[in-house]
Image (cartoon, rainbow over all chains, first blue to last red; front, side, top):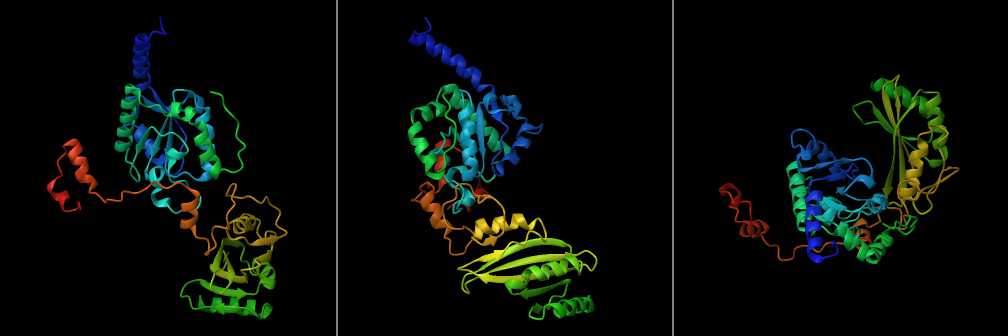
Amino acid sequence: MINDKNSQKIVDIIQNWARQHSIWVLAYGTGCGAIELPPTMTSRYDAERLGVRGAATPRQADVLLITGYLTTKTLKRVIRVYEQMQDPKYVVGFGSCTINGGMYYDSYNTIKVLDKYLPVDVYINGCMPRPEAVLSGFAKLQERIAEGRAEGAKKYKENLEWYRANQKKIIPNWVMPDYNW
Amino acid sequence: MKELKEQLINRIKAHFPDITVENNFNYNRFDVSINKESIHSILFYLKDVMGFKHLSDTNCVDWLEEGEFEIVFIVWSPAEKIKIFVRTRIDRNNPVLETLDMIWPQLHTYEREFREMFGIQFTGLEAPDEFILEDWQGPPPYRRDFDTAAFAAETFFERPGREDAEDVREAITKLTGEEIPEFAKKYSR
């Protein structure tokens, strides 16, 4: 019965509703943006009322926040963290640096466009985005999850070769384990 | 202060006659330039005999036009409350210096950084080749003839910008029906 198309639709709606209200963010900050997260999480803005809270390990987390500039060195770790995360998983690009390089546009060691290396579901722009912007980004992510449009992880699996080629272009010594999700 | 500085300069000059001193600072600082062969002995002398025990900072300056690297050691005497900038120059095409980390162990870290960022080789430095940059394949990035913008443009993806230079604010208001407040109108293009 569960393979029936209409039943699957109902299951998806319930699943997405549940996922939407429990967004656990990996407590991992890259760059300077992580400093906006304590005010977002604490009593003034209180992100937990949206179901946003911290998770200790990649395997328990749903959302990977890329907070700010990504050096090629950090990108290696971020890819590894992202691949360890269990489905469902989403990536939120945070700050101008992840969008077009921001103030590090001519740096020799930071990437400029995040979505060439990882599938990004929501971008939050600003340098830095204030906690209001961060919350609005999370609200947008919830909206997308509810509509079933936050399918970055699926995109990543389907186009893994393309992403890998881009990643290997700037990480020549590839010594990462292969995860079979 | 001035007398104390003169006194210290005379003491250094008695041992190292070939130094050039710059002493036109109004505060507790003077500069000493020395050739690269004597840099070990002057740093040892300042540290062990004259009480300049503390190494505050070490820097490298790229004098591209003169074809030289200048390495600056800033040493501080807690007793005299005086700091000295000890400068030495090495050839830019063949940047080799003997390691100095037996004087201050923390120079080890600085030397590794100079090796990676400027390509200066320190003979006798025992450290892995890689320091901060991982898998680095370009030229040393802190050299002035290294074009960071060109390197970034060819290494990393670039997001194409908005060519029409449209007024984004107006487009957003059309989309959302939001009204631009009167005071904000003069800022929009």
